[in-house]
Amino acid sequence: MSERAAAAAGLPAVTVLMATHDGARFLREQVASILAQRGVEVRIVVSDDGSTDGTRELLRSLAADEPRVVLLEPVELGSAHANFMRLIAEAPWDGASAVAFSDQDDVWHAERLAAQLEQLRDADAVSANVVADYGDRRTLIDKAQAQRSLDFVLESAGPGCTFVLAPRAFDLVRRTVLRDPEAADAPIHDWLVYAIVRAAGMRWHIDPAPVIDYRQHDANVAGANLGWRQAGRRLRRLRSGEFRRESAVVARIAARVADEPDRSQLSAIAALLERDDLRARLALLRGVGSLRRRGTDRAALAGILLLGLW
View: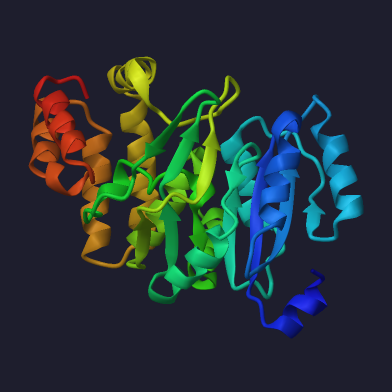
């Protein structure tokens, strides 16, 4: 449907930000599932980061046949986070009722955006559960536990490919990315976006109903984060201090977005995360209840703080 026909039909417009890198084997199916969304008019804005597998040629072919696919100039950035930061900062989105994020290798359920736009009536941003698709099996990834007051300091709202932001929330995220010198140093775009919106006091809804098939394969940047191998990787990040440093960056950015008294609280948490001593761990331990959504994650965090592993 053309933009003129969509406007005549009264359909809401959604700008979809897609970051690509060597995704040619999955990209056509992903784009098709976005363009097939029911009850909305979509425009896909794509930023490709250094693809060498035919992705750029495929994107040019798709854009030539489909005016709803808009390509930014290809770049060499080196990470999915940097690529999404570029999209947030540069993608045209004027007139959109919402802005959504997309990976390059998933399949969206046909009613995904229409359902999430309905949820935006009572929220500034929404995300959802996903079904991890391993080819030979499918597993629900549940991120819809009740939110805690400061969970955004240590975790995202789930996969960023399920995020949809209302204009007010996306405008804040864009301004923060453009103005905050640490935004480029944040660990990953979805965690940063969630932290900015929540720290500003905006409402974020996490829907328990899955909205995409979250394809799992050997080239995933993050993936479903399940299993013993991923647990071992998380433990190594904890022991190395990497996760602590990443959390401190997120907390500092969130503090600059927040109003008092949340600003002072987030600044204090950032200072604790920058230290690695018993007093800092005990101070963080007292706030464990507000830092993770899942009960088992809160218990695990308490344990590693008591053991001095983080």
